[in-house]
Amino acid sequence: MSLSADERLYRVDADELVALRASGERLRPARTRSARSALAGAHRSRFHGRGMDYRESRHYQPGDDIRNMDWRITARSGHAHVKVFDEERERPVVVLVDFSASLFFASQGVFKSVQAARLAALIGWSAIGHGDRIGALLFTDAAQGSQHQELSPASGRRGQMRLIRALVQAGAPDMALRKQGADRDPLGGEPLFPSAERTAARAGSLTAQTTSKQVDKDSNSGLSAALMRLRRVARPGSLVFLLSDFYSADAESKRHLSRLAQHNDLNAIQLLDPLELAPPPPGRYGISDGRRRAVLDTRSGGERERYAQRLAQHHQRVRELTLENGIGLLPCLTTDDPVERLSELLASRGGKGRGGVSGDQIAAARRPLGGA
Image (cartoon, rainbow, N blue to C red; front, side, top):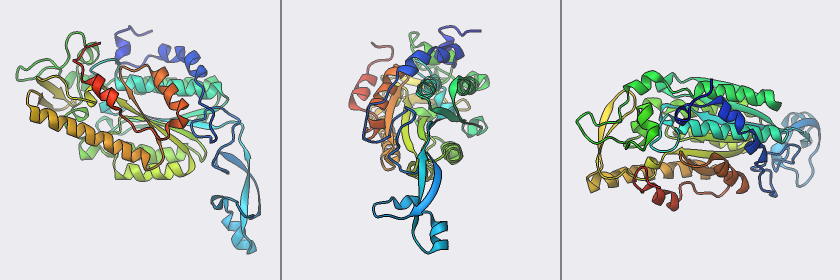
Protein backbone atom coordinates (compact mmCIF):
# COMPACT_ATOMS: atom_id res chain seq x y z
CA MET A 1 0.00 0.00 0.00
CA SER A 2 1.31 3.43 -0.94
CA LEU A 3 2.31 5.81 1.82
CA SER A 4 0.56 9.11 2.41
CA ALA A 5 2.30 12.40 1.65
CA ASP A 6 2.94 12.90 5.36
CA GLU A 7 4.37 9.40 5.81
CA ARG A 8 6.77 9.97 2.93
CA LEU A 9 8.43 12.67 5.01
CA TYR A 10 9.88 10.11 7.39
CA ARG A 11 9.44 6.71 5.73
CA VAL A 12 11.09 5.40 2.57
CA ASP A 13 8.41 4.74 -0.04
CA ALA A 14 8.99 2.05 -2.68
CA ASP A 15 6.59 3.63 -5.19
CA GLU A 16 8.43 6.93 -4.93
CA LEU A 17 11.81 5.28 -5.52
CA VAL A 18 10.46 3.42 -8.56
CA ALA A 19 9.00 6.69 -9.89
CA LEU A 20 12.50 8.21 -9.85
CA ARG A 21 13.49 5.99 -12.77
CA ALA A 22 13.01 8.62 -15.49
CA SER A 23 14.91 11.27 -13.52
CA GLY A 24 17.73 8.85 -12.72
CA GLU A 25 18.16 7.65 -16.28
CA ARG A 26 18.44 11.27 -17.47
CA LEU A 27 21.33 11.96 -15.12
CA ARG A 28 24.48 12.19 -17.19
CA PRO A 29 27.95 13.09 -15.93
CA ALA A 30 30.01 15.81 -17.56
CA ARG A 31 32.53 14.61 -20.10
CA THR A 32 35.97 14.73 -18.54
CA ARG A 33 39.43 13.47 -19.37
CA SER A 34 39.22 10.95 -16.57
CA ALA A 35 36.66 8.36 -15.62
CA ARG A 36 36.01 9.94 -12.23
CA SER A 37 32.29 10.57 -11.78
CA ALA A 38 31.38 8.70 -14.98
CA LEU A 39 28.37 6.43 -14.68
CA ALA A 40 28.27 5.35 -18.31
CA GLY A 41 29.28 1.81 -19.18
CA ALA A 42 31.90 0.82 -21.77
CA HIS A 43 34.17 3.65 -20.62
CA ARG A 44 37.91 3.81 -20.16
CA SER A 45 39.07 4.17 -16.59
CA ARG A 46 41.91 6.53 -15.79
CA PHE A 47 43.12 3.80 -13.43
CA HIS A 48 44.71 1.46 -15.97
CA GLY A 49 44.15 -2.11 -14.93
CA ARG A 50 41.45 -1.27 -12.43
CA GLY A 51 37.86 -2.22 -13.14
CA MET A 52 39.11 -4.48 -15.95
CA ASP A 53 39.49 -8.18 -16.72
CA TYR A 54 42.97 -9.68 -16.61
CA ARG A 55 44.17 -10.94 -20.03
CA GLU A 56 47.91 -11.69 -19.83
CA SER A 57 51.28 -10.48 -18.57
CA ARG A 58 54.06 -9.02 -20.72
CA HIS A 59 57.52 -7.53 -20.28
CA TYR A 60 57.65 -4.16 -18.57
CA GLN A 61 58.08 -1.15 -20.88
CA PRO A 62 59.10 2.39 -19.89
CA GLY A 63 56.00 4.35 -18.95
CA ASP A 64 54.01 1.36 -17.68
CA ASP A 65 52.15 1.90 -14.41
CA ILE A 66 54.12 0.12 -11.69
CA ARG A 67 50.83 -0.56 -9.89
CA ASN A 68 50.18 -3.17 -12.58
CA MET A 69 53.41 -5.06 -11.96
CA ASP A 70 52.99 -8.83 -11.98
CA TRP A 71 55.33 -9.57 -9.10
CA ARG A 72 54.78 -13.32 -9.21
CA ILE A 73 55.95 -13.70 -12.81
CA THR A 74 58.66 -11.07 -12.28
CA ALA A 75 60.11 -13.09 -9.39
CA ARG A 76 59.88 -16.35 -11.30
CA SER A 77 61.41 -15.11 -14.57
CA GLY A 78 63.86 -12.57 -13.24
CA HIS A 79 62.47 -9.97 -15.67
CA ALA A 80 59.95 -7.24 -14.91
CA HIS A 81 56.42 -8.03 -16.12
CA VAL A 82 53.18 -6.05 -16.03
CA LYS A 83 49.60 -7.25 -16.23
CA VAL A 84 47.50 -6.43 -19.30
CA PHE A 85 43.76 -5.99 -18.97
CA ASP A 86 40.69 -5.83 -21.18
CA GLU A 87 38.12 -3.17 -20.37
CA GLU A 88 34.89 -4.33 -18.83
CA ARG A 89 31.69 -3.55 -20.68
CA GLU A 90 29.98 -2.90 -17.38
CA ARG A 91 31.36 -0.92 -14.48
CA PRO A 92 30.31 -1.69 -10.92
CA VAL A 93 28.59 1.22 -9.17
CA VAL A 94 28.27 0.79 -5.41
CA VAL A 95 26.36 2.93 -2.90
CA LEU A 96 27.11 2.83 0.81
CA VAL A 97 24.02 4.07 2.67
CA ASP A 98 24.07 5.03 6.34
CA PHE A 99 20.85 4.27 8.23
CA SER A 100 22.20 5.09 11.69
CA ALA A 101 19.90 6.68 14.27
CA SER A 102 21.12 10.19 13.43
CA LEU A 103 19.74 9.81 9.88
CA PHE A 104 16.17 9.40 11.15
CA PHE A 105 15.76 13.11 11.73
CA ALA A 106 14.68 16.34 10.08
CA SER A 107 13.47 19.72 11.26
CA GLN A 108 12.46 20.66 7.71
CA GLY A 109 11.88 18.68 4.54
CA VAL A 110 12.24 14.89 4.76
CA PHE A 111 14.24 12.68 7.09
CA LYS A 112 17.90 12.39 6.17
CA SER A 113 17.29 8.66 5.80
CA VAL A 114 14.59 9.31 3.20
CA GLN A 115 16.85 11.71 1.31
CA ALA A 116 19.65 9.13 1.36
CA ALA A 117 17.31 6.47 -0.05
CA ARG A 118 16.19 8.80 -2.83
CA LEU A 119 19.77 9.57 -3.78
CA ALA A 120 20.72 5.89 -3.73
CA ALA A 121 17.76 5.02 -5.96
CA LEU A 122 18.66 7.78 -8.42
CA ILE A 123 22.24 6.53 -8.58
CA GLY A 124 20.96 3.02 -9.21
CA TRP A 125 18.61 4.07 -12.01
CA SER A 126 21.40 6.08 -13.63
CA ALA A 127 23.80 3.16 -13.38
CA ILE A 128 21.59 0.52 -14.97
CA GLY A 129 20.34 3.06 -17.50
CA HIS A 130 23.91 3.42 -18.74
CA GLY A 131 24.64 -0.29 -18.79
CA ASP A 132 26.45 -0.52 -15.45
CA ARG A 133 25.83 -2.78 -12.47
CA ILE A 134 24.52 -1.50 -9.16
CA GLY A 135 25.52 -2.81 -5.75
CA ALA A 136 25.13 -1.52 -2.22
CA LEU A 137 26.07 -1.81 1.40
CA LEU A 138 23.49 -0.58 3.92
CA PHE A 139 24.32 -0.28 7.61
CA THR A 140 23.04 0.86 10.99
CA ASP A 141 24.94 1.97 14.09
CA ALA A 142 25.48 0.32 17.47
CA ALA A 143 22.26 1.82 18.84
CA GLN A 144 20.36 -0.24 16.27
CA GLY A 145 22.39 -3.42 16.51
CA SER A 146 25.17 -2.61 14.02
CA GLN A 147 23.47 -4.41 11.15
CA HIS A 148 24.85 -4.59 7.62
CA GLN A 149 23.31 -5.70 4.34
CA GLU A 150 25.55 -6.34 1.34
CA LEU A 151 24.27 -6.38 -2.24
CA SER A 152 26.79 -7.53 -4.82
CA PRO A 153 26.71 -5.46 -8.04
CA ALA A 154 24.01 -6.71 -10.41
CA SER A 155 22.76 -5.37 -13.74
CA GLY A 156 19.34 -4.47 -15.03
CA ARG A 157 16.02 -3.78 -13.40
CA ARG A 158 16.34 -6.85 -11.21
CA GLY A 159 19.44 -5.43 -9.55
CA GLN A 160 17.76 -2.05 -9.05
CA MET A 161 14.58 -3.49 -7.56
CA ARG A 162 16.68 -5.51 -5.15
CA LEU A 163 18.29 -2.24 -4.03
CA ILE A 164 14.92 -0.52 -3.64
CA ARG A 165 13.57 -3.34 -1.47
CA ALA A 166 16.64 -3.11 0.76
CA LEU A 167 16.30 0.69 1.04
CA VAL A 168 12.65 0.43 2.05
CA GLN A 169 13.41 -2.16 4.70
CA ALA A 170 16.38 -0.27 6.15
CA GLY A 171 14.59 3.07 5.94
CA ALA A 172 11.69 2.10 8.20
CA PRO A 173 12.10 4.24 11.35
CA ASP A 174 12.25 2.30 14.59
CA MET A 175 8.93 2.88 16.32
CA ALA A 176 10.32 2.22 19.79
CA LEU A 177 13.09 4.74 19.21
CA ARG A 178 10.63 7.39 18.08
CA LYS A 179 8.28 6.78 20.99
CA GLN A 180 11.12 7.46 23.40
CA GLY A 181 12.02 10.76 21.73
CA ALA A 182 10.61 14.15 22.64
CA ASP A 183 10.02 17.34 20.72
CA ARG A 184 9.32 19.42 23.83
CA ASP A 185 11.49 20.47 26.73
CA PRO A 186 10.61 18.17 29.69
CA LEU A 187 11.04 21.22 31.92
CA GLY A 188 8.35 23.14 30.06
CA GLY A 189 10.36 24.86 27.35
CA GLU A 190 9.34 25.73 23.81
CA PRO A 191 8.65 23.05 21.20
CA LEU A 192 11.60 22.53 18.93
CA PHE A 193 9.43 22.52 15.83
CA PRO A 194 6.56 24.93 15.15
CA SER A 195 3.34 23.38 13.84
CA ALA A 196 4.51 24.16 10.32
CA GLU A 197 7.51 21.90 10.83
CA ARG A 198 5.73 18.64 10.13
CA THR A 199 8.54 16.17 9.69
CA ALA A 200 10.23 15.63 13.02
CA ALA A 201 7.25 16.70 15.09
CA ARG A 202 5.09 13.97 13.61
CA ALA A 203 7.81 11.39 13.92
CA GLY A 204 8.43 12.57 17.47
CA SER A 205 12.22 12.52 17.86
CA LEU A 206 15.35 14.58 17.51
CA THR A 207 18.76 12.97 17.71
CA ALA A 208 20.98 14.88 20.09
CA GLN A 209 24.16 13.79 18.35
CA THR A 210 23.20 15.87 15.33
CA THR A 211 22.98 19.07 17.34
CA SER A 212 24.49 19.56 20.74
CA LYS A 213 27.18 16.91 21.07
CA GLN A 214 29.28 14.36 19.26
CA VAL A 215 28.28 10.73 18.94
CA ASP A 216 29.17 8.50 21.88
CA LYS A 217 32.47 6.68 21.49
CA ASP A 218 30.75 3.29 21.67
CA SER A 219 28.86 4.04 18.43
CA ASN A 220 31.83 5.33 16.45
CA SER A 221 32.45 1.97 14.81
CA GLY A 222 29.39 2.13 12.54
CA LEU A 223 31.02 3.77 9.52
CA SER A 224 34.43 2.14 9.90
CA ALA A 225 32.89 -1.34 10.11
CA ALA A 226 30.81 -0.60 7.02
CA LEU A 227 33.82 0.68 5.09
CA MET A 228 35.75 -2.47 5.96
CA ARG A 229 32.89 -4.53 4.51
CA LEU A 230 32.68 -2.20 1.52
CA ARG A 231 36.19 -3.18 0.53
CA ARG A 232 34.77 -6.64 -0.18
CA VAL A 233 31.73 -5.44 -2.10
CA ALA A 234 33.47 -2.81 -4.26
CA ARG A 235 35.93 -4.54 -6.54
CA PRO A 236 38.83 -2.43 -7.87
CA GLY A 237 37.65 0.07 -10.46
CA SER A 238 34.20 0.59 -8.95
CA LEU A 239 32.46 3.93 -8.77
CA VAL A 240 31.47 4.35 -5.12
CA PHE A 241 29.04 6.79 -3.51
CA LEU A 242 29.08 7.27 0.27
CA LEU A 243 25.76 8.57 1.67
CA SER A 244 26.06 9.52 5.34
CA ASP A 245 26.10 12.39 7.81
CA PHE A 246 29.54 11.10 8.87
CA TYR A 247 28.96 11.54 12.60
CA SER A 248 30.41 8.10 13.27
CA ALA A 249 33.57 8.68 11.22
CA ASP A 250 36.78 8.01 13.15
CA ALA A 251 40.47 7.35 12.53
CA GLU A 252 39.73 3.80 11.42
CA SER A 253 37.21 5.13 8.89
CA LYS A 254 39.91 7.34 7.45
CA ARG A 255 42.26 4.39 6.98
CA HIS A 256 39.61 2.35 5.19
CA LEU A 257 38.72 5.29 2.95
CA SER A 258 42.36 5.76 2.04
CA ARG A 259 42.61 2.15 0.91
CA LEU A 260 39.33 2.26 -1.00
CA ALA A 261 40.36 5.46 -2.78
CA GLN A 262 43.53 3.83 -4.09
CA HIS A 263 41.57 1.48 -6.34
CA ASN A 264 38.15 3.10 -6.81
CA ASP A 265 36.48 6.39 -7.70
CA LEU A 266 34.88 7.68 -4.50
CA ASN A 267 32.30 10.41 -3.99
CA ALA A 268 30.71 11.42 -0.69
CA ILE A 269 27.29 12.99 -0.15
CA GLN A 270 26.88 14.49 3.32
CA LEU A 271 23.25 14.37 4.48
CA LEU A 272 22.36 17.45 6.52
CA ASP A 273 19.44 19.14 8.21
CA PRO A 274 19.38 22.97 8.36
CA LEU A 275 19.88 22.71 12.14
CA GLU A 276 23.25 21.10 11.41
CA LEU A 277 24.40 24.24 9.64
CA ALA A 278 23.40 26.90 12.14
CA PRO A 279 21.80 27.09 15.61
CA PRO A 280 18.00 27.40 15.86
CA PRO A 281 16.47 30.73 16.93
CA PRO A 282 17.02 31.70 20.59
CA GLY A 283 14.96 29.50 22.88
CA ARG A 284 14.92 26.39 25.08
CA TYR A 285 14.50 23.14 23.15
CA GLY A 286 13.95 19.57 24.27
CA ILE A 287 16.25 17.14 22.48
CA SER A 288 16.64 13.38 22.63
CA ASP A 289 18.78 10.64 21.12
CA GLY A 290 15.93 8.19 21.64
CA ARG A 291 17.24 7.06 25.02
CA ARG A 292 18.11 10.22 26.93
CA ARG A 293 16.63 13.69 27.09
CA ALA A 294 18.34 17.02 27.46
CA VAL A 295 17.67 20.72 27.04
CA LEU A 296 19.36 22.88 24.44
CA ASP A 297 19.23 26.53 25.53
CA THR A 298 20.15 28.85 22.66
CA ARG A 299 19.05 32.03 24.42
CA SER A 300 22.62 32.50 25.57
CA GLY A 301 25.06 33.98 23.08
CA GLY A 302 27.78 31.78 24.51
CA GLU A 303 25.78 28.60 24.02
CA ARG A 304 24.91 29.58 20.45
CA GLU A 305 28.59 30.20 19.77
CA ARG A 306 29.58 26.81 21.22
CA TYR A 307 26.84 25.16 19.15
CA ALA A 308 28.14 26.81 15.97
CA GLN A 309 31.72 25.87 16.83
CA ARG A 310 30.82 22.20 17.27
CA LEU A 311 29.04 22.19 13.92
CA ALA A 312 32.00 23.89 12.23
CA GLN A 313 34.41 21.37 13.74
CA HIS A 314 32.35 18.46 12.44
CA HIS A 315 32.12 19.90 8.94
CA GLN A 316 35.87 20.52 8.96
CA ARG A 317 36.50 16.89 9.95
CA VAL A 318 34.32 15.72 7.06
CA ARG A 319 36.17 17.99 4.62
CA GLU A 320 39.51 16.67 5.81
CA LEU A 321 38.30 13.07 5.68
CA THR A 322 37.34 13.42 2.03
CA LEU A 323 39.80 15.92 0.61
CA GLU A 324 42.84 14.13 2.01
CA ASN A 325 41.75 11.04 0.09
CA GLY A 326 40.79 12.84 -3.11
CA ILE A 327 37.10 12.11 -2.55
CA GLY A 328 34.47 14.38 -4.04
CA LEU A 329 32.20 15.90 -1.37
CA LEU A 330 28.72 17.32 -1.82
CA PRO A 331 26.37 18.38 1.00
CA CYS A 332 22.68 17.60 0.55
CA LEU A 333 20.06 19.14 2.83
CA THR A 334 16.79 17.54 3.84
CA THR A 335 15.09 20.37 1.92
CA ASP A 336 17.08 19.93 -1.30
CA ASP A 337 15.84 18.43 -4.55
CA PRO A 338 17.88 15.19 -4.71
CA VAL A 339 17.87 15.19 -8.52
CA GLU A 340 19.38 18.66 -8.67
CA ARG A 341 22.00 17.90 -6.02
CA LEU A 342 23.07 14.65 -7.65
CA SER A 343 23.25 16.42 -11.01
CA GLU A 344 25.67 18.91 -9.45
CA LEU A 345 27.89 16.12 -8.18
CA LEU A 346 27.98 14.29 -11.51
CA ALA A 347 28.62 17.51 -13.43
CA SER A 348 31.52 18.61 -11.23
CA ARG A 349 34.10 16.02 -12.27
CA GLY A 350 32.78 13.60 -9.66
CA GLY A 351 32.76 16.31 -7.02
CA LYS A 352 36.55 16.66 -7.09
CA GLY A 353 37.60 19.88 -5.47
CA ARG A 354 34.28 20.62 -3.77
CA GLY A 355 34.71 21.88 -0.25
CA GLY A 356 31.56 20.66 1.45
CA VAL A 357 29.17 23.02 3.26
CA SER A 358 29.03 26.48 1.68
CA GLY A 359 28.50 29.90 3.20
CA ASP A 360 25.25 30.31 1.27
CA GLN A 361 23.87 27.13 2.81
CA ILE A 362 24.77 28.30 6.31
CA ALA A 363 23.15 31.69 5.66
CA ALA A 364 19.98 30.03 4.40
CA ALA A 365 19.90 27.76 7.44
CA ARG A 366 19.91 30.76 9.76
CA ARG A 367 16.42 31.71 8.62
CA PRO A 368 13.72 30.98 11.21
CA LEU A 369 12.29 27.48 11.13
CA GLY A 370 9.47 27.29 8.64
CA GLY A 371 10.76 30.36 6.77
CA ALA A 372 10.71 30.56 3.01
